[in-house]
Structures are given as C-alpha cells and as structure tokens.
Length: 591
Image 1 (cartoon, rainbow, N blue to C red):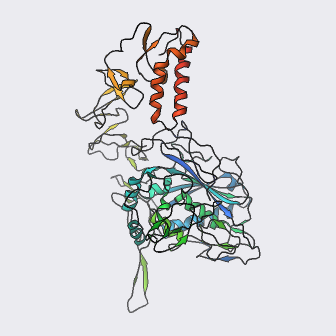
Image 2: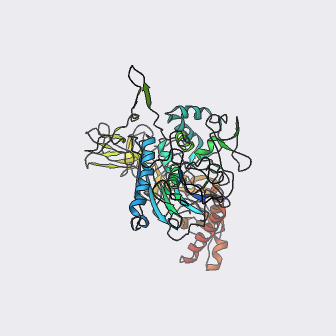
Image 3: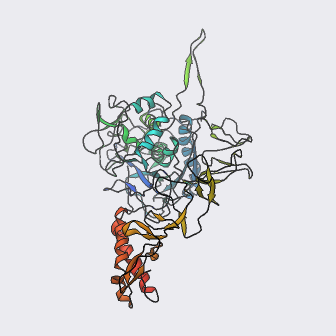
C-alpha cells in the first residue's frame, strides 16, 4: 500500500532532453508519491513513490503454516541477464540475525534473476528497521514492509513506443494489442528500473536516506519492519509472517508495479492493464477493477479497491487466503508464496517491460521427452559482457572494440584509461570519427556530430565547436539548434544575439540600445535575478522608494511567472529579489 507523509514540492535540474518541464507529483489523501522541492538537486521529472505491505485485519492465528503459489526454499539463477545489486544497511548487518535476513533477501533476488533477462542492473538498499529510510519517521502500526523508489515522468508516446518495441513474449504481444489508440494521460511515470528495462535513460536517483536527486545510487530502498513478527526461513512458524513474500512484494514495486489512482493524473505502467469488463477500462477507485492483458476479456486477478491499501496491489481475501499472492494488498501470517512466470506478478512485470524468460522447448523422440532452455541473446549493438573469470554471467553491454566491454550502468568506453563511464543526459558519447571508446561526453549537435564538454556549443554551419564565455549563452532561434551563436540570456527562455544585445522582455524583442526613458526615469533591468530585461524606472533616493521605483521590471518579472509551476511563489520572489537588490545598492538603483 502506498503511504506518503512528506510535503509537496517541485524539482529543478536536468534529466532528459525529452522533457523540459519540472513536475509536481501530487499527493492525495494518504496514498501517494513524494514530489520534490525546487532547488533540491533532483533531475527534472523525477519523483519518489512509497509503498507499504500491510498485515491483514482478518487474521486467524491458529491457521496451519503453509507454502503456496510455488513457494520454494532456494531458487538457483538460471542465467537471466537481470542483476539486482543488494546493499545491506547497517540495520541488517548489525542485527544478531543478519545471516538469516541476508540469506532470505538473496533468495528473493535469485527468483527475479532466474525469471527475467533484461540486461540491466537494479540497485536496491535493504533495511531492517521500524523507521523509513530517513531514520526518524516511524513506520505506522500495521506496516509489515515498505519500499521507496525513484519515478521518472515520461511523455506518453515515449514510454508506449519503448514498451511496444521491448516485446519479447506472447504476453507482451497480447498486452500491446490492448493498449489504447490515444493517450490516457499526458505522461506515464515508470520507476527508474522499469524505465531502463524498456531502454529509456532513467538512471537510479535515490540516496540512502530516501531523498532523490542526480547521482543517487539506488533504484529503491526496501525496509522490513523489525517490529513485526517475521520468520526468515520456510515454512513460516505459526503466527509469523513470511519475510521473503513481503520482500518480494516490495521488490516488485521498486521494479515498477504500483498505481497512480487517487494520487496523480498521469498513469503508472500498471494502470494500462486495469479493466472492469471486456473492453471497459477502469482507472478509478470506485467499482471493481481487475488485471487483464487482453482488453479485459480475461480476469487474471482483482485489483484492491480498499482505500486503506495500495490500488496497485491485488484484492485480498480473509485469512487464511485461498490465493496468497505476493502482491496481495493485505498479508496473512502462516502463508508463503513467490513470484513465478505464471503468477499475476510475473505476468504483470512481463507486460510493463521486463523480459520474462519463456524460452523452453520440448522435443519428443523415441526416448523420453527432453526440455532445453536457451537464454535470450543480447540485443544489438550490445554484446555479452562478463568480467574475466566469470563466463556465463548473463550480462549484456557495450562492445569497446578492444576485447573489453562496459555494462549498461556505465555504457561509455574510455579505452585509454581502461574504464567505463556514463554520460549524464542530455550529453551523449562524443568520439571523433574512427576513434570509438574515447571516453568523452558532449553535446549532441543533431547532425550525427557532437561537441565535447570543453567546447559544448555546436556551430553546424561552420562544422566547429565553440564555448560561450560567461555571461553569454548559446543563443539559437527556435528550431535552429547548432547555430553557433552566443548571446545574452534574457532569463525567460529567450536570448539576444550580439548584434542586438538588449533584452526587452515586456515587448518580446531585442534592441541595439537601451530604450529612451521619459524625464525622471533611467534605464533599469533585472540584473538582480541574473538576467537583463531593460525597462525604464524612477531613480529611488531612499530605501522605501524602491518598490514603487522598480515597479516596471517587477511587473515584467511577474508576467514571466505565468508559465511557472508555482506562479504565486515566483511572483513573490520577483518582488523580494528586485526590491531587496535596490535597497542594498548604493546609490539605490533598480539594476
């Protein structure tokens, strides 16, 4: 079940050229994802989702412990390319029962690595505590486990195109045929791991305290409630909860399961497969819903509609449950289960972009039937990428052309220094022709060339790279990237070239000289906010005259706030910055 206890906010920064606007992932009621504070250092379009596994409110404590839904003691990795990199928090390593806890988590991870063949590494931090990852916010009563994961806001067409191109199974073909012909929401919000599973650039963004931002090393954090009655081996002891089942529940949500119903208008990938009848979608918390991959014709499992639970989890029956699936919204003691190829969780992960390994074939001869399994190949241009001495690791990566390769997490080859790098978007690998593996990141010029970070401005007409000396910035007309012109930043998404260097934002034009001002006024600008927007202002002689004297550029600044996510806060900042600058300057001036 989703739980959100943190303040609303916005993000500032850059994460992808596909998205130029920050988002606010709204929180509604008690279920939600955490939006981020502007200036928090997080990439644009990134948020955090929090999910919780709840104990059932209908518990029969005398039920016999049981294994169900294919629950096993140990699962061997059969060679899938998916790698889940576990980091054990000190709350686990310092616990007297740490060996059993770590073994349980490793066993859960081995299930996913045996089922899915995506050539990605998913990084998850595991904790055993009574608090969230921040170390201070307590897990409320009834919470068995919780997960926090990074989300990326992707335009509808970007995610749908990537999802359909990623199809590898019959489930995928059926599910993709059920996708709508037009967008159900402006964007889709996959988890960072889910985005990479379908080939998008969505690196991990979460830090150890649960905050998100560029450089965060984790896709998610899973916290097992140390105050709950858990058993770490199977079958579960009478009256105890199966820790592995709850751990898999939270791993599923770091990988990408979860709903946006009653949280935000943009959908999560799982919401694409929510139906109430054949041909009838239901994206509301009222009525009934179920998970289906064939346009609602087949009801695979019901979705939870209890508002105290997660709307992305399964409908849960009374304890003991007839179908104690991993993703049930409410869990019972004495029951254990695992994610499997044919379980609702395995099918759901498959159709949101993970590559389920259904590659077995049965050959009948005069002898007994035999079954062989062949791992799926790496998708070109990727190649098998195993460390020396570790053949058969199942990892795909970039061919560096010198007998080495780089994994998907750091796909850029730096052959000279024998290392692998990652170019932070919007930068791309930027190697001269005939010199692959140069280890240089730069600006994509849009004409099959790029410019290195030392000279990042593309001048396509003259086939050269430039650097704009501060305070100048690249200044290309709309639709003419790579023009090679440096100019004045006008602070409103436009700029003025050297031939007309004066910004007149109020009239949306560039001037050669500052405008002529009427008697008693002087040219003024928004230098206090870091850009030039020339207007005419009175000349204040005392501090208390600043607000009135600077009103023209304050008005211009406020007008530019209309396109901002928080216009009221923006307008307040305009007045505070400009008037404050005027009061501090000697003599007082509106620039």
